[in-house]
Structure formats: structure tokens, C-alpha cells
Amino acid sequence: MPQRSYLWTTRLCGVVLYSLVFVFTCHFWQVGPDPLRGQPELLLFMLPGIVMALLQVESPLKSTLMMGLWGTLLGALLLNNSLFVHSSPLFVLAWCLSALFWAGCGALLVRLMQIVMASLH
Image 1 (cartoon, one colour):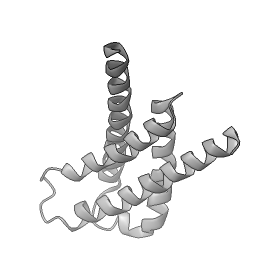
Image 2 (cartoon, rainbow, N blue to C red; image 1 turned 60 degrees about the vertical axis):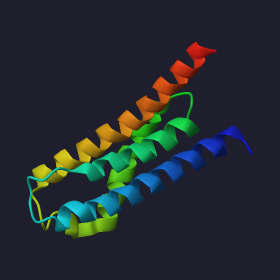
Image 3 (cartoon, rainbow, N blue to C red; image 1 turned 90 degrees about the horizontal axis):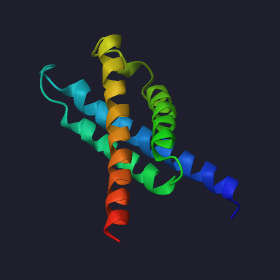
Image 4 (spheres, helix red, strand yellow; image 1 turned 90 degrees about the vertical axis):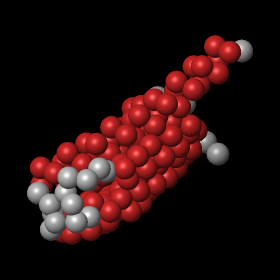
């Protein structure tokens, strides 16, 4: 398989995984009765970040953030108007930026583990 097609395949898989997590976790904060409760479901966004960092070794953080931006757009399109029914656009923006943060943390966690493992050998 050529390198170029591998890059597009991994990026597309990352965007799809991020979008699925986005749609799945949006359900939790839309049905929650208390708007001030915690958002532990945001930690699920570390999973696409970890996967993307393992697949894109050359630039894990950049690939993860680009995957997150495209995945957020795709997830928002999949949810259509139900995203803004239960909350304000400012809350949705903060939530999306939080999701990008946690995806980036997943990628950085993989990078940290790679550095630690390299220093042990």
C-alpha cells in the first residue's frame, strides 16, 4: 500500500472515530438534568487522540488536532440542529474546545510514553 493512501486512510479513520465519540458524548450532556454537573464523558476523547498518535508517528499532535477539527464539523453535521436545542452556542463552543483539548492530551500521553520507553532502553 503506498504511503500516501495510508495517510489518507488513517486520517479518515481518525475523523470517523472522533465523530462517533462526539455524537455519543453529546447525548450525555443534552439529556443531563443538571447543567453544573461534571463532564467525565469528555475523557472519552482521549481515545481518538491515542489512536491517531499511534497511527501518525511523525506528527501526532498536529494530526490529532486536525482530526479533531474535521471530526467536530462532521459530528455537528450529523447532529444537525439538535446540538443547539438544549444549550447555548457559547456552551457548545466551550464543549467542543474541551473535546479538542482532551484529544490532544491523549496524543501527548502517547508521545510521553514513547519518550519514556525510549529512555529506558
